[in-house]
Figure (cartoon, rainbow, N blue to C red):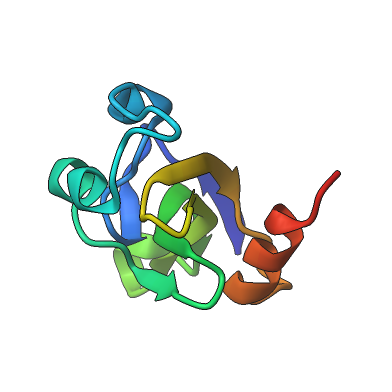
Length: 119
């Protein structure tokens, strides 16, 4: 078995890949949750107690090739998890947002909680 890098940034799982250029319309304190969802779509999950919405996707970064592919072997995707976190205030206005990698060793809630902690 050996890894082969992927070409491009294909999404293997989750919502479409969201880039910073997709979020240029967002203005902290002015953009509403409704406006955000109209532009970007519904989130993967909401943590209503934390006032945070999360969009999730996995980028295919490569493939594991095993066996002789032409003789019954195969491939398996190697992925990298990414999320977009959006924090809203009590009035459902965007407070802040960030696109980041999601470590596979933590739950999404743990990642969000760490992101919310002051530096």
